[in-house]
Amino acid sequence: MDIVRSFEDYIKQYQQSIDNPETFWADVAGDFHWRKKWDKVLEWDFHKPEVQWFVGGKLNITENCLDRHLPERANQTAIIWEPNDPSEEPRNITYQELFHEVCRVANMLKAQGVQKGDKVCIYMPMIPEVAFAMLACARIGAVHSVVFAGFSSRSLIDRINDAGCKLVLTTDGSYRGDKIINLKAIVDEALESCPSVERVLIKKRTGSKVVMKANRDVWWDEAIKNMPDVCAAEEMDAEDLLFILYTSGSTGKPKGMVHTIGGYMVYTNFTFRTVFQYQEGQVYWCTADVGWITGHSYIVYGPLSAGATTLMFEGVPSWPDMGRFWHVAEKHRVNIFYTAPTAIRSLEKAPLSFVKQYDLHNLKVLGTVGEPINEEAWHWYHEHIGKGKCPIVDTWWQTETGGFMISPIAHITKLKPAFASFPLPGVQPVIMDEKRQEVTTSPGEGRLTIGFPWPGMARTIYGDHQRFRETYFSTFPGKYFTGDGCRRDAEGYYRITGRVDDVIIVSGHNLGTAEIESAVDEHSAVCETAVVGYPHDVKGQGIYAYVICYDRPHEEEKLRHEIRELVAKIIGPIAKPDKIQFVSGLPKTRSGKIMRRILRKVAEGNTTDLGDVTTLLDPSVVEEIKAGAL
Image (cartoon, rainbow, N blue to C red; front, side, top):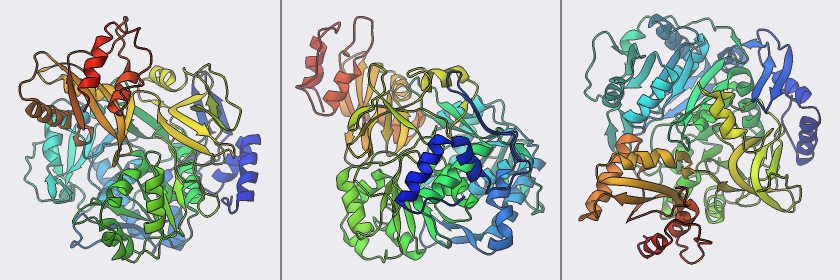
């Protein structure tokens, strides 16, 4: 099925996808290689909730990402790898080479005892082997759980134990700008509390000194030596698990979102080709890390299933200077560039000379991901990076959705800065008000829900379907609740207004307030903590912690430093609070519930319009919080 090629075509396809969703998605899925065609396109019940796509279909996703491209694309570059240090040589990996590398890793995993259905934890930096590993797991029917290599050992423990991982893939260390992080040491610390892990494979990257544990630790390069470069793909059911990816939850326990093979493959491919309007031969660069859903869907599975050339970047945008992104874009003649508003806001603050010294004329499409982009950053991005000629696709989606849900389509949708614009074909958004009634008017505002299944959606939370139901399907029965607020204007454009639950989006990454509060509370001086988000010029949202101590701290700055370092150790540096205000009490109702609405307003700098505080157990605590606001 051909992708959308005009706005009229979009209207036509969208209507078809709403009127006859099963026919629509069957046409899209027909372009892939299936070992056995499905018996039924869709079975669903949002009340249970249960969703199955392409029921009875048999396939292997790697045959669609690799094998089927070889007759025509064997010598085409599949992955461009740009290392952290610009003086190190990049790698261009063709589809033929990628096929052989994936097969060698797949055979290596089998030799280490990994079987169909086993869980494999991947805790690696942005090197080509991380993509090889993901695809190798999928090749043999193992389930991968990629953990962002910036997370701490505590976060690693939670994720390994919840999934019951049998094997861990990691490196000796990772580069982050001019820093080296000893990943193997973090793994060693974690595995003291992970009884399910039988084997660790370590790829050499930084030359960091590591301790090898006998009968458990194996060097990757030794394990892969002499492995055959062909490996038969395991036949999988469309609804078999492809991966588990953990996202922060409001209870503090990470949620293992389960994505299955058939629907996810069809959806990521369709949305990648549609939104970016990818053309044969273009170079596409998503700056995300594969530890997040963006890396899964739009560095690995979406682009490779579409036969695209996808760029993987190991470094950071600010090293060795603030022109690194633009240097890489020029060097590899990038046509499509997809990054986070956080990065844009950070680079916007640097002198324009960092942009002007590079030739960006090859850019055709720009994109943003992770959070709504503010208008000022949108205009800077459009003018200085896109030179006024590149459309910006402001994509709204989630770990749970698997792929883009609401987004402009490049060169087709008329753009409005800071608006995600229209739902993609197959996506049926429904705005609900506080009385749980549908908002049918435009303009209208409320909570964003989805009223009908789409192929890329998560099927459950691993090992806890009840939590899946309660989190996403209980607030508005019969609908998927996104957790986001949204506004629809008179022309039907959607604008995402941010989270309405206890999740903070920092630099495009979801962090549960409960998880951060729990980490702060582990400091011996801390009695209780409440964490909220507040607007941050660079990160979109910053983390503001209100902390009650057992005794009034004498050295506040020293304690703030200790708390930040503790949070970094328990969760990761990304979760460090930006502001820590020491308070004697928190605004609580008589039932003990913290009124976060008040804390959010104070954190945002609004100390005059706090609403009704008469229901509080001790209203005087609000005055103290206002007086000490940072």
